[in-house]
Length: 308
Image (tube, rainbow, N blue to C red; front, side, top):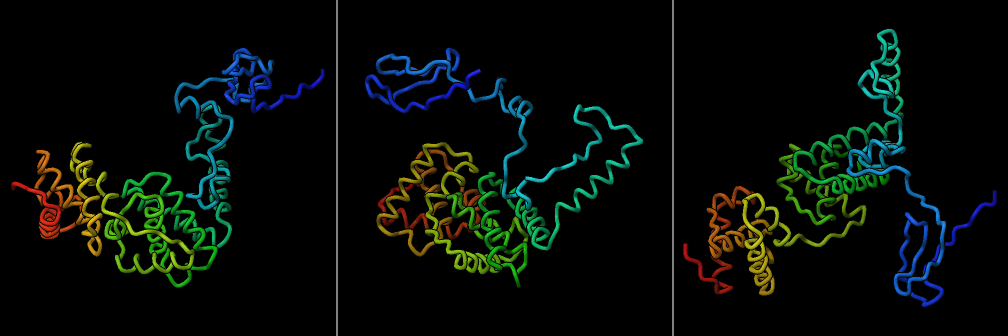
């Protein structure tokens, strides 16, 4: 049987348009502009099965999980499941369970073969714990794992605690992905000293040439407003206040969380979804005095009339 070569067409030979569609039910490539059938009997390289949700897609997939940097071996090694069931879901006979137990134990041992892998295994587990406490998404964990791996490759771990470097990598990842978390939040979740994490972060950022812009108060508004149960209208108003303040350079030299909290407090009062200074301070991790000072300054300099 003669093998048919599939031509990958980029434009219509008739009208030169690039607006093409592939109809896999009819096995045709069609130009949407002039209607010309450019090719027929095309091959569908996708799976022959259909899946209507994520669970079905995972069950029918013939490949394993994708590569991930959050596991020390990048998820490429084999894992013997802890459940005593075979590939068909049937119970393993009792006479074979001791053998499976020994295989599982040796498989866990050989996954970590040297000191570097042991370091990564411990650090990435610690990193995942801290990220879970902060409810950080998967992309942050992946980025933090990449930063930590680069630090290991450059020998930046020597003389520093694994927990401190992993917390610093997580803080750097938050900054890189524009999902800001303060050093205090990272320190509380990692149960470490704030100064140690800050010092390690500055060292790692300098050695790995990670240049990041300072966080702005606007980046904290969605998270604070969401935790306070405020509407999108309040968020928009708070961002508008902050943009005005940044235009007049009222935010420079001040902590971004305190300014963001003050703007949210002002917006909640102006639009009738009032929250107390204490509620806003608890969510933002600042004192009520800070919010009072910031909101009075913003209201005065921006000519905002607030009725308390």
